[in-house]
Image (cartoon, rainbow, N blue to C red; front, side):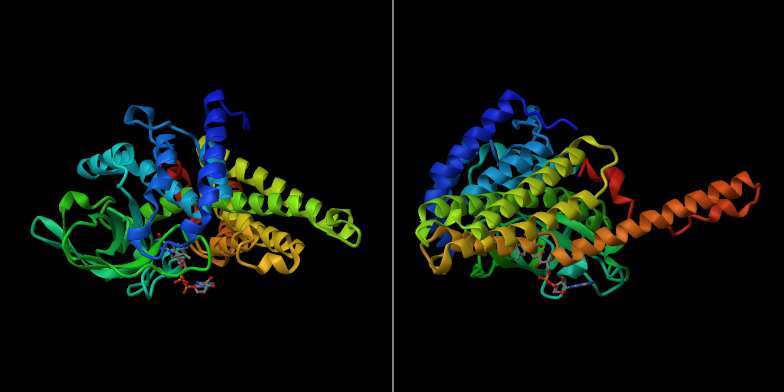
Amino acid sequence: MDFTLSPEDESLLAATRRYARDVLRPAADRLEAVTSPEEFPWDLMEEGTALGLKALPLSPELGGRGADMVVQALVTAELAAGDVGAAYFFRHYWRFARLIPRLPEPVRDLVVKGITSDNRFVPASASTEELAGSDNALPYDAPGHGAMLEARREGDGWVLDGSKSMITNGGIASLYFVLGRTDAGVGIRSGATMFAVPASIPGVTVGPLYRKLGQRGSPQADVAFDRVRVPLDFAVSEVGSGYASTERGLIAANVTNAGLSLGVAEAAYEEALDWSIDRVQGGVPIHRHQLVAHDLGWMRYQLDAARSYLLQAAWRYSHAEPFNPEWSWGVRVFCADMAIEVTRRAMFLFGGRGMMGGYRIEKLVRDALTLTHGNGTSAILTARLGAHQADARIDSRAISREASEIAAGTAAGAGARAGAGTTHEVTAEVRRG
Ligand SMILES: Cc1cc2nc3c(=O)[nH]c(=O)nc-3n(C[C@H](O)[C@H](O)[C@H](O)COP(=O)(O)OP(=O)(O)OC[C@H]3O[C@@H](n4cnc5c(N)ncnc54)[C@H](O)[C@@H]3O)c2cc1C
């Protein structure tokens, strides 16, 4: 595993760091103040767009950099150290850029042109509904559960009816990827399909932006679809395979979500380190108190461990075949938990001021707390990891049993694996997601 970056990637990271430090970070108040789509600070995103950040994983032939997941994760962390909401804005494009090889032509054209040449093109991914949150991430695979927005064939198109909740970029998005139920008689794994829906189509309406604990520069809103009609080739997954398509996207997004957490936590640590040198109590700068030095050391090695985990998960995503999604679930949860604990300890080193508005550490604590729900809650992703481990063990036991039975010349072996390992099937396809 080699994490050495090319000179071009090194200079992209340095430019991203400067942009995050000099443009995004000083604009924290503006980003925090976004309460309606009209207030979204487009101008702050211009420099990042000019750096090519929206098109990072897009292939060079299509106008991108073809960056692997290691570069994507590191760029995300740099951006998030400036402002996590702005980081979320840029890395949200990557999920759609990765989908390009799978998209039907008209949607592919919309996405490629949008990412490369339209500053106001914003994609959004809409799965969550009022009654379907975790049921989309750890499916209870039965009729009536998971996303139920109705999608039905009518003549030469699809008609969508229903609504989605807490959709990132709701209100500023120009293109929604919407998970609809095409067969209500079966579970979500085979009964859902993903559709591309331009925001300008009649029947798409957006509710007010949510007021949120942290990550306030990244807007969320509920989005309603009232008899919204799209052409047949705006179904962007195979009919009935929308869940698998969502899953692939989320497995990739988990890795960059871990980068968001790392960036927020690094920023908190930097704040705490400087503060501990400048703040004098007990006659000395507080870092000279052993308990404070202990906290600084603890934070540093947590950050270093998280960075190593992230680099390894990212490298495996881009270069190991097959990719085991456990890396994506685990690193997303580990880094989110680490960010919460590091920002909390950093805040405590500020004493009472850590809780006061105007001190950056207070914002970073709030930002960290919002990183536990992206792409499924931390609890759900951890449970998936555990279940995947158990399935793999059951599978490998069945394989050993089958091998011994074949060696012993008994016939039962061939059936021994039936039903084992039901959650493995995402692995082989995942990299191309
Ligand atoms: C900042 C932010 C951005 C978001 N952006 C988007 C977006 O762009 N698109 C989108 O579609 N959604 C988005 N969401 C929604 C997000 O995906 C959901 O919040 C998440 O999937 C959890 O669903 P829920 O909120 O309905 O919680 P619920 O599913 O109601 O969960 C409530 C609690 O029950 C637990 N729980 C639920 N089911 C189980 C189970 N089977 N076993 C054990 N515990 C369980 C959960 O861990 C949680 O603690 C976003 C959310 C946030 C906070």
